[in-house]
Length: 357
Image (cartoon, rainbow, N blue to C red; front, side, top):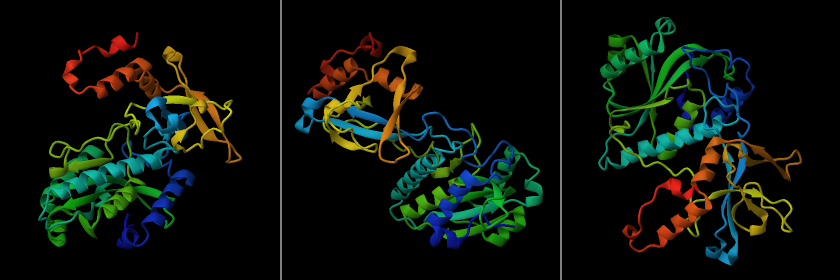
């Protein structure tokens, strides 16, 4: 059997190993061919036209900004899909951040905790697991978890292992990676009762260790549409632990209004901002994007071949179109007025549709 993980990788070379999986996801022809029960490896699908391109969000309420400047926050657009060859790294980082936040939030509730999360691998007998469906394998896992006395854990399913050190040639060998909190049954006792192999790869002592390990696991996890790549059991489940969601688009740091989408005015007398700019800039360099109905196209930007200048491309994007409609000039004015009220109950409620007229 080829171990899907080793202690030396976790402790000594997490970055290089992770980078290698990202490289194989882009370059290995064998990653596309392997499949188990609808599960594939990440980055083996198709990208969308707007993937990995920049959008200029900003705020033109310049009277409330220093030196009457426009606030711009350029954001790299991703489709947030694990199968996208351009956005899967962003998906990995986003998912690893969420998992790290959930697990560290749980640890904060355990002031006198004895345990740390530890990385454990559960592997069913390979001659049987390759012929089982995912639902049957998942049901078998539930039995194994009870025997192992694992009650609180994060689970990542790996349908594949690799035949070579370069990790370019996968083969079907289903197993589960877990970050476990609490006592675990003796290895020999567990194997005798379940015929599964259990491997303890050590404690994750800091939140950085949790993030690094989770990111590594997601880089070659099994992904399938409609199935969660990461699952939470016990005290860290969605039902028992509520974690506040991060805002999708931040507000202006100066006037706290919602950021709107702008196009960059290349005809301005002033030099346009850098592609990855965040901060104040001359307002003449930006033009608001108006809502023209379903025909509205969003300005996206990407670097030219010279790596110095960038160009604009108009692309339809439903998510950004909804953002424009929900943050029209009238709605933003109303939100600003609402924020200035000392007693917010003094304003009468209106339907949001009344501001779209």
